[in-house]
Length: 72
Image (cartoon, rainbow, N blue to C red):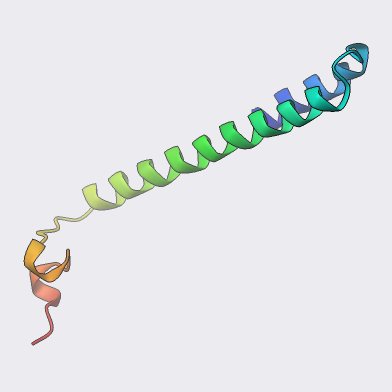
């Protein structure tokens, strides 16, 4: 979805030559920012879903290693 929006804007950006290169740089930075947000949101959703699928009891003493996997 972001890629399609970027393509549409880039195709129409030639009409606004007053901003020139600065507009293109701002467009690229905005696109990178929102793409990064999408990646981080996907990682957060993936982490939540992965923890929901299994019952994990985390022991904070061992740095987050589940109790059944402790090394003695």
